[in-house]
Length: 471
Image (cartoon, one colour):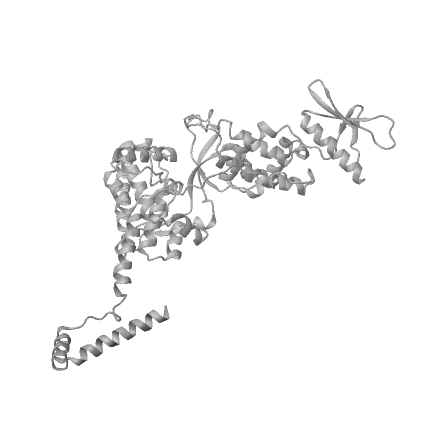
């Protein structure tokens, strides 16, 4: 057996028992040829070698040969369409298209080793990150976080490749991921959030902030909120029971993912907004079900949020009367002047400008949800289940580990409470104060009986001597 180069291809030459002529298998890269050569040698040594089936004269194909591109198409059809929702489907398709297929697509699935995956992950970190349509090119490289997302998809895909017998092992299982520092998301204190609300002059951003802080909502949930889900009728408001139901979110999904999931009746899209430039757009803005079942929830409204929503509702009625047929009424709480939805990146820009104007600590809009959750934990005296009902997390651990931020002001308050509530009581009984009356009586007794003083001093000396002896 040997590996030889022919033009820009590589051939593995070997003999099979009972055949007079040697066989040849051709590969695009030397690595693939070397791996195949080792596989044949190992299989022959173990007695398990099965010669590939000859398709035509001079053409040989292994019965399990399949390229990564071909396999991924099958994986998406057989597995992805059954398991992925609209948002995750769009994300996975994007990762595979931008970062996997260009580098691994032409390789045979069986030829990829753990060493190849390690080298691939290292190489990706030096590649430019793909710029999403509508975003600025900052010149950023592929991040360790993106590599971890790619690894998650490939791990699942190669797992299926093993089950479907396209390869013997999953090469991602022993792969080394690049170091990814877990940075805890910063969040504002109560005072900083109040300062931001007081300084906000943008009515759209202000409403979004009220909903994030008062209702612990995600930005996608805020932008997808419709008046039909808001219940603040007079009787509910007067009894303090106004509420809103969260059962949808605003997302931008690829048209391919929407169409593919609709064909298998697994799409979670409730409504598709008309596309402004249909010929150029490959994505669509939609209202869809939240990412998890636990995200469907009811949140009771603080009166401040009720008053804010009432102002918004009144303002929208004025816009409708002014614009007439030009107003596109989608029933959105957060809407542009003509009724169309706001995208998340627009709200993020508004929020960034507010931070620059006020000089507050730089945080992202999602941090308001962290601030809201921490505040509710504090106000409810640690009632995790009640707060979890507002945030929509499937596990209470997410509330305590991720969102319960400890601010320095609260920690200083705890230290003060330790002084007044705990340490101040130490020594209350062992070091009781002697009253002035008792001192006067003791003085008179010593004047009348001076010999008592010498006895008292002697007793103190004996006690001290015993203490020294024990030590």
